[in-house]
Every structure is written in structure tokens, then in C-alpha cells.
Length: 284
Image (tube, rainbow, N blue to C red; front, top):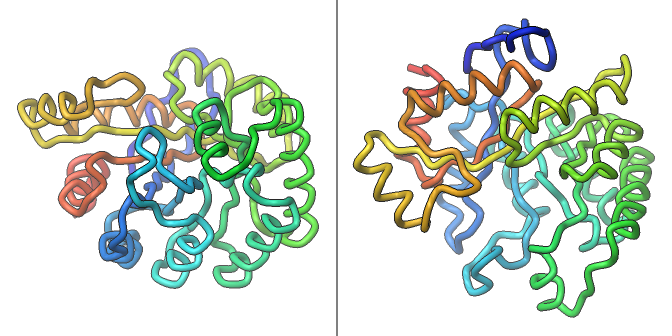
């Protein structure tokens, strides 16, 4: 794992813990489960604490790409791995609260003690996906209300499963601190994360509560390959891009603020898992 670098002037977040667990999002945009199942089988060998899956019926930005459905993936990951498995995030607008709760209870039965249920409300980028399947995207207030109902439903049937709220809107941060077991800040930079995490942690009080950071890492073994990969993506906006030393340094800075880190490594394929494991996590 990445050594903690305590933040200057304080002891917020993961500071002082020695390590911060790092998890990986799985290769989901495919019709071939080979890579996904291979990752699940070797996740602990790579040094990953857990595996997380998204909740999209079509990928954002390209509705013609294939995608594996969330709940089926969670069952496969649980059966094929020894690490934590979770959703980041299950969208509460796609299922009634009782259905989401049934999925949580099923996952808890399959992998007791290894499940995390991240829940979210979707955003403007989800609107096109919703419309494609004959749905409308409710107002933010309606979605936050539905999120609260889903949290309650999950806790009623799967009380042992930690529930995280994903999303950085102030209403989501407040609901997470009040009703959930954790909060995920996807894509926040260090300054934003420090401010928002401190607020959420203070509002959550003394009870056990997990703050995590999530984000996309464009990882490459050298500068030339990195430049090619950034160009292929059309730029580096919204991602952290770098060679292993740069990525490791960024994760060390994050480790002083959070309890866990979940990364989406691009390209999400075996050579990069090996590179991340060896050169960033230091796993032999």
C-alpha cells in the first residue's frame, strides 16, 4: 500500500494510520469477462484491498459501447475474489429502494464481511442514459429523498453492509454524514477534498465513518507513452495522469486526508495492473 504522508498542520483523515487501502474499479466496458475475472482472481496478489463496479446501462459518452451490468458483476466478483467488493455507485434512480436493498442483502449473504454498498443519485451526465431507457431524471431534491429511502431500506435488511454515499453536492455530503457509513469524493482535487472531507467528518461525529477518494488515473511506464495515452483521451482534464512516481506521490498526498482510495486505472488491463502493483504499491 501507499505510505501515508501526514498533511501539514493537522491530523485529518487517514493520517497516522500507516497505510490507506487502495481498491480498483473493474474493466466493465466489454463483452468479454476474461479480464474482469482474471483481475478478481488475482486482486489480493496485486495488493488491492477491493474491487468496485459502476452502475451504467450504457457507458457515458458512447452509448454504443458494451457494458456489464452492476449487480451481476458484484456476484461474479464476490465468487471469484477474496477482497472487498462493492458498488461505486449504485444509482438509486434505476431501482426501487426495496430492489437495491435485496441486492445488498444477497451480496452480504454471498460475501459476508466483504461488501460495500455505494449509492448515488446520478447527475446531468446520467440524463441521456435515463432518457434512452424511457426514464426521466427527477429533480435533485427528489433524488436525494430517494437516496435516503434506499439507505434506510438497505440498512433494514443488510445492517452489516457499510453504505457509502457518492457525490459532492452539499445535500449529499449532509445526508452521508447523517445517515450513511461513509462518503466518496470522486474526482476531487486535494484542496477541495481537504475542505469537504473535514466538513463531512465533523458532521458525522465520533461514530465509525469512512471517507474515500475516487478518481481516474492515466498511468504509463514512461513519459512518451503517457503523452500518447493523454492524446488518445483528448487531454488530461478530470484525471490524474503520470508515470508511477507521479501517481505514487499523488496517492501519498491523498492518503493524509482519507481512509480509503478507489482508482480507475487507464488502460484498465493486466499490464497496467502489474505496473501499478509493482511500481506504485510496491508489491513484489
